Image (cartoon, rainbow, N blue to C red; front, side):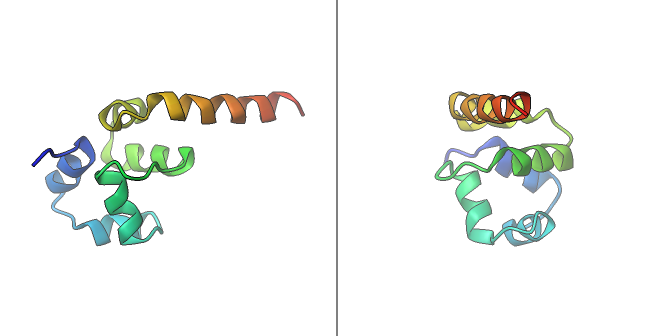
Length: 84
């Protein structure tokens, strides 16, 4: 089985997917999809997860191969903030 960094970090804290999902107020199935790379968390959720596990959020992006998509979101947010 190919474990992801997110799954590894969760196991290090001895937490279930449901327990972690509850911490972030998301469904267990959403969290499971994050761990399996089937779904990408939004930027705020990603940062909250990274902060909880005490790692840079970019480390999660690389672990999931999501860096390109997340950069698109960051640029959209930046554009919205700068155009006010």
